[in-house]
Amino acid sequence: MIAIKSDVPSMNGRLHLTVRKNGEVVERWEDHNLIVDGARQLMAKMAAGIVSTSITNLGVGSGNAAETVDDTALKDGVMIPIKTRTVNDKQARFDFFIGTDQANGINIREFGLFAANGTMFAHRVRDRSLEKADDLTIEGYWEINF
Image (cartoon, rainbow, N blue to C red; front, side):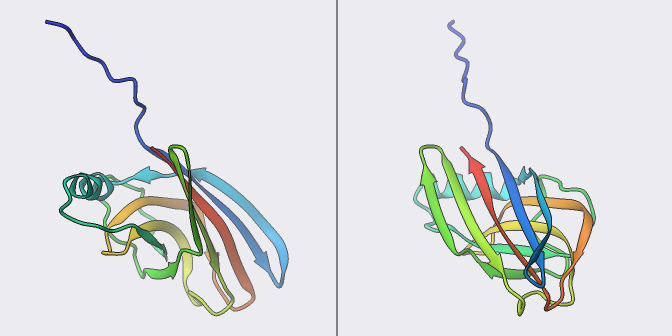
């Protein structure tokens, strides 16, 4: 019997943030993320033609528990529409902007990418929170490599 080995790496991604307070950059941050099982289940359904959806929202929340593949939601989650979505070969990029009037009052520690049907795709929890108020904006992008 011939053994077949796949050289396709697993999905992975990175979250990039630029935080501004009163227009001045106070933090630039980037780190890896966890692709959750909901993403794999969603892609299986998409491949079989059972669902037709796409990633449309960035979620922010206050949870501080480490990411697990079973994650499906954010604590105190607020959804922000993705501004632009682009694809370059096997990489999808999701650009977002959290304005002065969005997610105020949340100590943001976690970020998630969500499909239009509410399925969590990727999750990242930071070590430190961002105290979101009306003088703070967060812009960034999330890259997913397939």
